Length: 425
Ligand code: URA
Image (cartoon, rainbow, N blue to C red; front, side):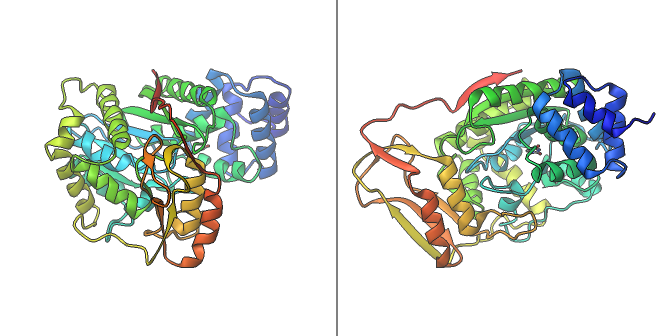
């Protein structure tokens, strides 16, 4: 069946619903290059302004999945479960989480991305481990999963190619911020990845994609519905992203912090979120009687799974991680309680230090990043270090310090708020 692209655009522009056939044709024709970029840009803008019904979003996602391959893990002898985070500052949770869940009996096949902008990418963090390889064939993925129970690697170009093309277009046409388009983009890749169960960590706050909780809740609801409509058991946690997670923001520094968590230590917020997401992942996979994730962190089995996962992908879990040549300390300007440490400011500063990239072809510095010496609620003394900045060259510091201007406050008191705001199933 064939349609006229202009009719499809007009239908959405005027607030109508697209039929399943119109959606299938639009996504397939765009992927084949038969709908011009300017027509898809107009349609994306109409969708951003007019929205989509649940049925339209489900069909749009289905059409994007069908534009490429859908992976199949049925040869594994255990259930698959995965997590997706909408991205935050210091969000290294996949690193301790995937091996912890593997140690509790599920398989975690995670296809992940590189960072863009102020939030870091899981692959960039893992690539700071000497020898570790992000690109694996499907057979290699299966081998790592069978051996270690978890694999984290780059998504190949065969997975939801329609999304790859559309996301690049949305990026340059001011149409990223549409809940139906974000939800279908994320879920098409996760469903094509072939996981049987999925837990979403949808972040809300200054360092997140969604700045307020209501938008984050709507995004979570839309993604959970898409998952359910495609037979993937999907649950979302809404989590706070007003301040960085943990005490490390960057690449190698976040790997080091993740290893502390896997060794039974690490910052309380990283442990709390790792354990909460791991429990949800196991429950979503139907493994209700499995070992508790907190126990896997205590008894060394999560660390064993990590070492096995890193070695199976060519990495040396014992190798020294890259260390920055230059450091710069930011001192507390007063004595009192750290009442605010803004995730966005810290994320932009880490990015300017070289930990992230502005364009997807840019390289990242593995050693660049920021170490926090205090978290909101901690007492600090004037002149004592609040943050340490790490960079390959000292000329990075001025612009990073500018991003931190106004990003922290010292006061008299601090009222803690929960890290896990809500659960949507
Ligand atoms: N991440 C994605 O994969 N897609 C979006 O649309 C936004 C964030």
